[in-house]
Image (cartoon, rainbow, N blue to C red; front, side, top):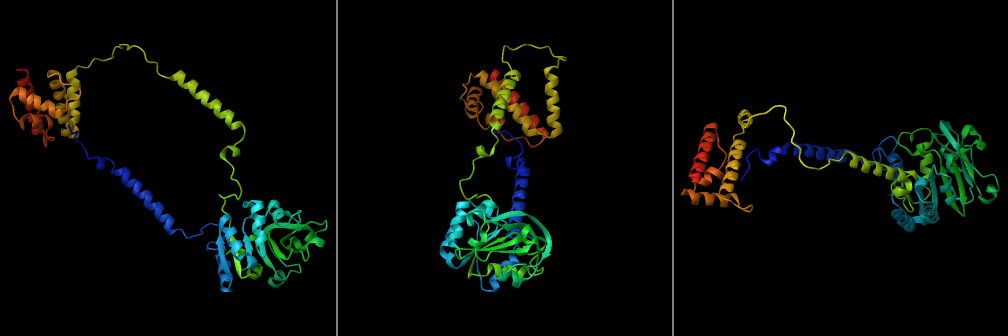
Length: 389
């Protein structure tokens, strides 16, 4: 028997419409957001923190720029173009030191942006270059003999400070230069360090702002960027993916404190104890006196008024037909597998009524108005009287 009411698609219309709106908003956000938006030192990012202007200047001077963001792509790029390429690593601390050592070995020139001590040791073993704090935004003169820094002149940016290891570094690294020192005093550290290791030029750039769109036009920032990154025909712009940590990625368990496991176990035990304490105990039924005794007729009349107030003639007709089918099933001792159609056929054979009489009465469509609902109730009552007689 079909239960009348609103179609299912109308009941789910609001949920479907809300989901569709959310999907459209997500698609619009993805399609309308420019590539590289809000990603610092991204050569495709036109935002102030991006480096699109630097990339365009380099390409205008004939430099072939290759952007990579994974270890596999960086290995492939350095293997194919490393002998005549400059490798720029925007965040060397995200790369495993062993991977960084392999990548640096294949490149002709190497530029590291604000590297930490582990990255510096991977490229220049023996702690030759050491971090020395942070420098505020200021205009600084070159103050060194490096030809690129002297040609660029003064620069304006903030960044990390570095200094050279004083124990025999100058004897091992020829031509090491501390450029753009803090307050023009090299002992306190400089924001650019240029060294040569076995013929390879290694530049430690502590002021990444000179590469950004916002600061490229200040002082000699553009000239320093062009000369620092334009020594070779190819520039491999490696911006490591934060989700790819280079080596073996730590598991979630290794990132959690050791006490998390014991606390979780205690919480599980506490929840089980609370469930056992508050769980419902199934036992024999207990008869409880009701505060008010309501006659069955009043309950039926109240339900009928609710149906009439809501205009739910279909639900009212379904209730009448369902109750009649149950009474007829008990009358004819129908089994649990008997379908409504089989029961209607039994009723028709017992009463001598032929279809569409019993079928239309018990399984027909919902009435269209109140008069039709009254006629249906009379027809059901008449059919049950015939069955009883």
